[in-house]
Image 1 (cartoon, rainbow, N blue to C red):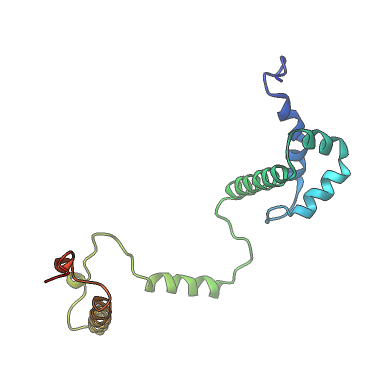
Image 2: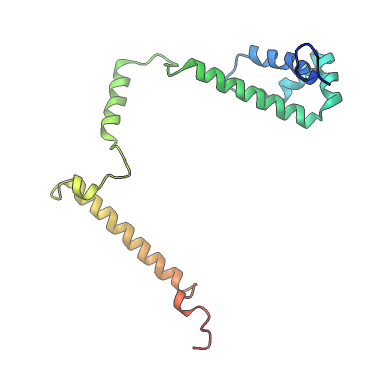
Length: 157
């Protein structure tokens, strides 16, 4: 089962043509089953070796999984680059949006950070009150269907 020269399982050598083929594909999507079948049909010697050891389901699943890993590795190599040409106005718009989005941290206390006389504070207060009223109404509706924790087990009283 093991090759004495390279100290790798023989089955690894059977998969090498598949890996090479997957590396040559120029796509951002995982290879489709039809493409796999077409390639295996063209490479009948590889297909015979793989079919003798693995089920068709396993072949499809494993080849797709390998291709997904290859795509992820290629994506990491690309790094954070632009994929399309972006105009200056688009960049400025995105910067404006980033400025408007507040930074959210776990220790951020909105009530102490925003002055109470601002419109933002009033809007947040109104929103919080509306959410509270919705929760109170929901609690009333649910309490009709579920007994209160103190009344559980006291059916006769």
